[in-house]
Amino acid sequence: MIEAAEAGGEAGADALGPAALLASIRSARSVEDAAAAEQLDLAARWADLHPPESIHSAASFTVAGCEREEPIAGPGTPLVAEFCVAELGTVLGISSVSAKKLVGHALELRHRLPRLWSQVHAGRVPAWRARAVAEATIHSTPALTVEAARFVDAQVAAVAGKIGPAQLDRLVAETIKRFDLAELDPAADPEDGYLHVDPRHVTIHDEDVHFAGTVRLEAEVDLADGLDLHQALAHGAALQKALGSQESLDARRAKALGDLARTQTALDLVHRGQTAGTGVEARSARTSTTEAGPDLPTARAVVLHAHFDASLAGDTTVFGPTGRLEEGQRLLLLEQLKSWCGDSRTRVTVKPVIDLNQEKAAPGYEIPDRIREHVALRDRTCVFPFCGRPARGCDVDHVIEYDHDAEAEGRPQPGPTETENLGALCRFHHRLKTHSAWRYDMVAPGVFEWTSPHGHSYRRDRDGTTALDPPDPLDPGPPRIPSPRR
Image 1 (tube, rainbow, N blue to C red):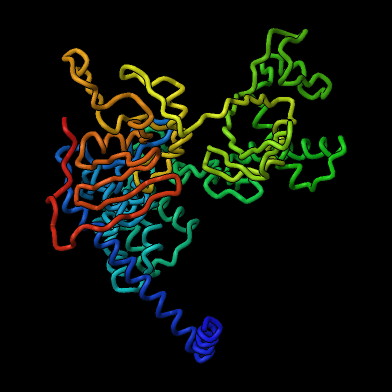
Image 2 (tube, rainbow, N blue to C red):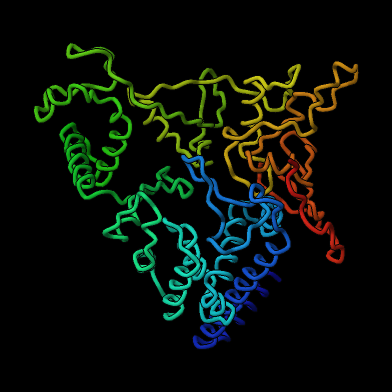
């Protein structure tokens, strides 16, 4: 029966000729584009239902390394309650950050890029192209005024959104110059607005890990820095070859870059003039004391947490060929780990195995390191649906709130500090749980069930997030997500 069904399916596919197949593919793409356009419209309408009570409770993006925050859309767009994006994200099966971007793009297009917005809904521009333009206009530095954004909108709409990233960058730079926006920023170059759009960056795509345990790095640096880096990598690759390396030039250059990352902070910059150009007084990052001066600073420590399954074969411990690296939840090969451990600059710490099935508890509210480690290993990431922030950087939350007055009043503690009542939550979702109608319970160790303000339920465990039975679509639920308590 199975073979007959497969044969029937193949016969149905063969019945379509090349022209019909192409027409079907084009039709499917049109349906996909229309659905994406409708999703943008619905996201904007969802934002309309959830205005914040004050600017302090509006959704925003945290800027890494800075204390400031960026709005989710440019000047002239309405503010949105920060917690409303969480329910939108869970319904779509995406993270809260991705939902925040979706809402921001929708508002940017509707209010500041109206021509592009109309073209998206007319089917002339796919939503992903319009969202790329919105991303550029939202995060322009300095910020684009409403008039400047309308200028970008007119230029992009004239070519039906067919503009590449480089052209878009130049257009934004021209807009900054045309509207004298650089003068609003004291750090801008008054002679050339384009120079203020600083293209320099170093991006490590650690979310896209190759099966061999490598990641892609992309950078744009000053010309002088680029030439110096090229020279340093060429020297490092040649040195490895002279020492007997049989690897390709590309692999040797990649290893040389890693060597720079590990040893650059150990250079004795004070005595640089004595050693520059000689090539004979190069000192190791492992050297603690030298004749030329005091102790050298050690290279910056990079701590990685690797997990491998192991079994005993007699008196020998046998490790599996693949494991998991906590940082980025990446695949890790045993051979790669061995090569790291073979480096004399690597310090290996082997910690005792923690039995995650054994409950741990502590008196009082404070969470000891041993319990915090247990929770981080068990949960791996923030336990909010679809959130992927590593657990080691999260808060450890009492699922049932700890009662600080219970002991003084002679009552049993409803929210004890024990692993059965603790979960890892990133700061945003910790605040969400505390200040909104979202609720969750731990139904088994490491298994959490969440209920949203509108009645949607989700189970989060070590395998990810699963949507449970949806609520009655005829039930309108609460009118809006409550704002944070102040």
